[in-house]
Image 1 (tube, rainbow over the protein chains, first blue to last red):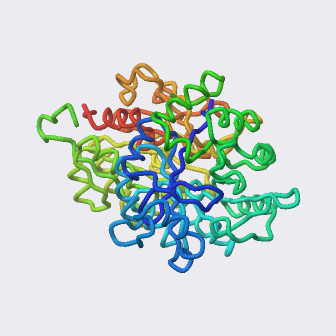
Image 2: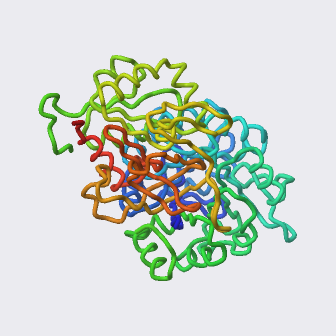
Image 3: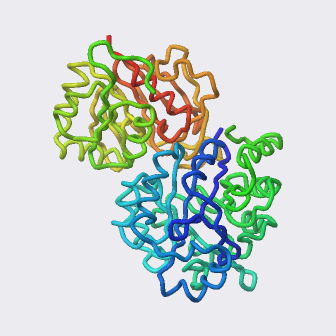
Length: 273
Length: 218
C-alpha cells in the first residue's frame, strides 16, 4: 500500500532559509544545506524548496520592515553565490529523496536549468495563473510527473479563491475552477496552501482538506498551519489521499520528522519509517 | 565507498546514458556518493569504456525510443549489452524501454532485450490513483542480485502510469502490490530493471545501486 508522504517545506529568500506567517513574516532559520541533510536523514519522504526571493521593487513594501527587524543578513540581494541554481546544485548532492523546487519560474528555460542542477520536480504558481498554457507546455516538455502546480487559497465569502504573487493578489478563479483547469492542462501534482492558516500553527484548514477529497486523480499535497503532530493526523483523517506538508514545525524540533512519523505510525497511519 | 575492487579493471566505471530525457543529475549524484567513477554521456567511446551502464529516463515510451534513435545509441547499446554482456540497469522509463514494444501514446517497438509489452496500469481499487506516485513496498525474490543483503523493509519511490509485463516470468525479481500488482524489478543475466527510482529512495536505494555496480557478468 502506498505510504502517506510527510514533506517538509523550506522557504528560501535570497539564499537564506526563512519562516513565514500569513505569507509575510520572514525570519532566518538556518543553513539550507545542513537542513536538507537533516531532513533527508530523518526520513522525510520528499523535500520542497520554495524560493521566495522577490524583485527588489517588491522587497521594500512588504518585506523590509519585518525582515530588517528579524535578521540583518536577509535583505541582502541575490548574487552568484546564493542564487537559486547554485543552491540546488549544492542541496541535490546530499538530498537523496525527491526534491521539488519552486518560486520565480518564468520560462521553460528556468525549469530546464533547475532540473539540470538536480531538482526532480518543479512547482509553478504565478506563471500558471498568468498563462495557463504554460502548464501544458511544461508538462509536455518535461513530463507531467515533473510539474507541480502550487495553489494558494484564501476564503472569501465562503468560497476558496486562488491568489497569486505570494498570496498578494487575488484572481478570479475559485479553487474548483482552477484545480479542474490545471489538471486538464497536464499538472502532475498540486501543492495546496492555505494563506489563512500559514504559519499560525493551529492546524490545516480541515474543511479545505476535505473539500478536495476525490476531486482529482493527481496527488495533492496540503500545506499551511501545522503546529503539532496531531495536526498531521487530523489532516490525514479528513482526507486519506493527501500528502502532509509542513514548514515551521519541522525546522524547530530536533528529529522532528522521525518523531512525527513515529506518532503517525502509532496512530495507524501507513508511513515510511 | 565501494567495497570491491574489480580485479582487472579497477573500480567500476559507470556511464549514465544521456538521451535527452529526464533528470539524470540525481542518478549521477547517487553514484558519485557511493564513490564510483561516473559520467553522463552519449559518446560511443564512453559507453564502450564503461563497465556498467545505466539507462535512466522519464517521459513517454515513444519519445524515449525516438531519442535513442536520434542520438544513434541503439546499435552501440545492442553491441555492448547483448554481444558483450555489459551490465545495464534501466530505471523507470529506462526499464520499460528494455521491452519488445510499448503502447504509450502509440504502438512503438522497444529495445527488445526483454520479451514483453509495456501497458498502462489499471486501477483495481477506488482509492488507487494514477500515476502511482510515492513510496511503496517491494517484494523481492530471494535470488535477487539487486536486493541482496538489504535487510531493511524494501520501500522505494515510484512515479509511473505504465508497467512492463515480461513474457518470461522467471526474470521477475520484485513485485509491487498496486493496481492489482505489477512487476517492479527484473533481472535477466546482465540486464536489470527497476520501475522505481533507487536514486531517489534514500539509503536503501543507494544500497541497491551499490549491488548493481558490484555485479560482474559471468
